[in-house]
Length: 220
Image (tube, rainbow, N blue to C red; front, side, top):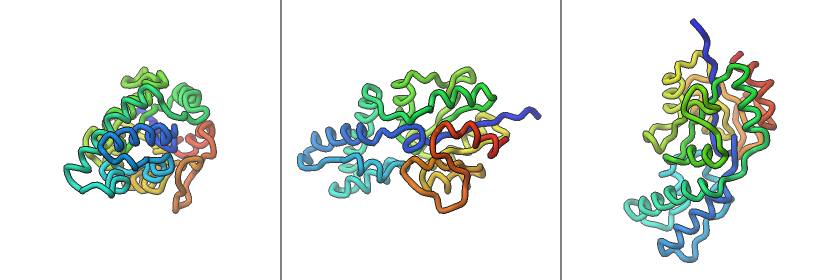
């Protein structure tokens, strides 16, 4: 059987940091909804990165009534966030595109799985002009919570199975990324420059470029 090796990436805290612009976009919609004295900060967003959108809303919008009121505000923020990031982007970590290109030339296939809303990954890829969607593209496939309401471990497994990967790993930055990866049955690489620590001994990288050396040790 011919081997197909894939590297599946988290988004926030792993390939980029969009917290500042997400906070700006959410503040617009929060204040438009009548909460004039409320501001969503970059630190607020960084503190909830990686969680499903409904959980994020419960944390950041605790001053709203749970149910239709909170859901309406969350939907407004999600929708505008994608539009805003498509135009304004976020902070791409050093070496991402160059490292992906080198990994692809070495025969690895690149994918993204995130707990974000639908359209978020596409906004990232579009802003930086990264091709995606086919085996010829730099990023071959993507999946997220907003597309199917599946938890991260389920989407990691779904993407790995859909692309018939024989060997794969997940690269993420927070404890829940590690736990989801373990549940999906894959090895994990910790992006130590991101938003969190991992309560386990796992391979780690201090910069994105280090994946060139670390990935072969993890999946061959």
